[in-house]
Image (cartoon, rainbow, N blue to C red; front, top):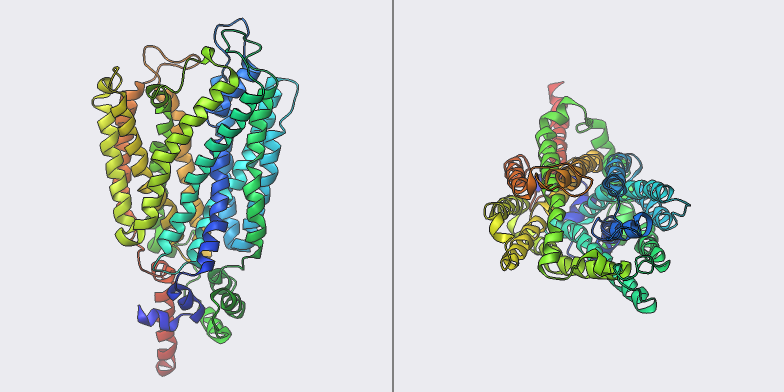
Length: 538
């Protein structure tokens, strides 16, 4: 390791050895605010929040005893287009981040997010179908921008961090997702409470038309447009950050600019290593591409490991939303829809979502932040998948026991632990590891591929299991009979167990430099020794 540092560029060694400084925390906040916005935007329109309000506003039949809900196809489209956009953005911006640089592409993703957050709230039209179509258009492109933030945020943070606390810094960026989810609940709570106090409405069963009111249409639009605020705030600070030294030196091959940028950031004097950079370039020791046999030999299994574990994790993670209605009913915060007005329902569901995020989602993220550089990525991911398997089985085997009156508290606790070990486990580590183990010129691309596989799993979890978990005898309106929740839980436990197995394909990056993990340091050493031996061979 000492030899690798000696042969490598001083600017990279300085970054690896740097003490935790103010710029580290600035980078966490700047990169993390993008993730904060991502989570806010994607979770604010979940089925148990805005889509119920949209159903009341646009699909209520006043002659029916219950308020309207979004048809299954429309509900799937509103969320599904965002997933599709995110997957596309992860692949496209991941590739572009390696071609044009992290910083310039980072600004592009934010502007897309700002424009489409505002556009989502301005989805005006004359018919429910056209409103939903316009909303889906903007949600797709919003997801496209959000998708780009996955590989770019992780890559920027990994390339700025020192190797001692790199895992915690990348995990802290991802942990801002928890605060984004929490903020989505709080903002919805505040906005709906304010409108409910200013424009009180009767319950649907008392006055069907009056329970909705025109004000409800402003609530969801305002909340969606507020998602543009953190992205706007982030844009200024992102544009002030210099390009990462690893991209500038190892990809753009400009050692002088890398040293100059990092001298300002680290507040130390770094020498111009242009000659050493030219020598490294002339060796051409580490210039293989993504589809080369050399990449397949060195990193093929690593990419399979990061992509498969993220895919399997997101199937299980996003399918957990299927059980939220049971949780909300158990804590007696959600009543029958007809006994509430539109804004009452939004308020109550927001309160439940906020409590769930506060107690189950946020703590798991920060356990990972504090322990990832102590325990290691590999052990945390193994533990997370194993514990998720245990708690899924704990819910599935005695499922009939949990659903009988008086036992719901135990169900809530088991469900909460499943979320906790997802976040103090693979939900965080699958984001961290792909940013650490691939070469600089392919790092963003490989992270984007891994993240896109995760989003494909999310679509299976959110929509495939929505249909699969339907009661085989009494499915919900608009759905066909499925295998039921209990059998779905058994399937999910098996998926978590597969994630546990595929984790063994992923190497441990704890305490190692990015160049050691990618093999770039070893290549430089081998090439340096080869260049010294070559004259004597002649």
